[in-house]
Length: 192
Image (cartoon, rainbow, N blue to C red):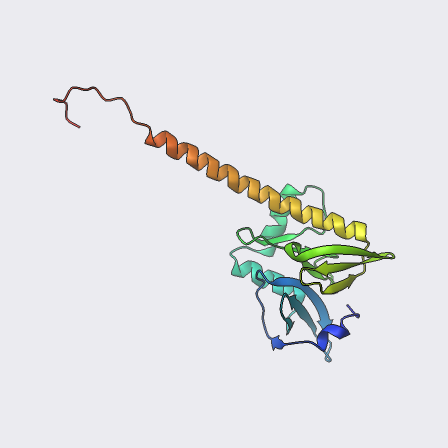
């Protein structure tokens, strides 16, 4: 968290609220000069300072997409049994899945977007996440731990994709069955 001074120099704008979308790559906590927990949001083409905490951004984004953070975590727990520090799949349709680096309740937690992690580089006991626009975020967890978190998020997204495909296939099968012609006698005197 303390190593983001280089990002602040390149801020493009400041907002009071923020909704995660397809270009959101990372959310990093930062304290204001008054000790308030704010966020630095890294997008593909811009960096934004948001005057709310990273967790609040996650919660408000869940609300925007029609779910709750607690509901997302409960669903993830059902799929990723026995796992902790679960990813939050904010939008199944858009595959917006945010990965917490440490506990979501920890104010120092950094959130990474699953689909924007291009590479992970080992840095001693720590790691650096290379984002899809080649910006780098230094993290205080090992490369192995971060890769495990990425795998959990991928498993979660894949499980929802498989469920959606099964539902589509079931619907197609019912649709085909309903379109089958039922036997009707050839007697033209019968009313239809």
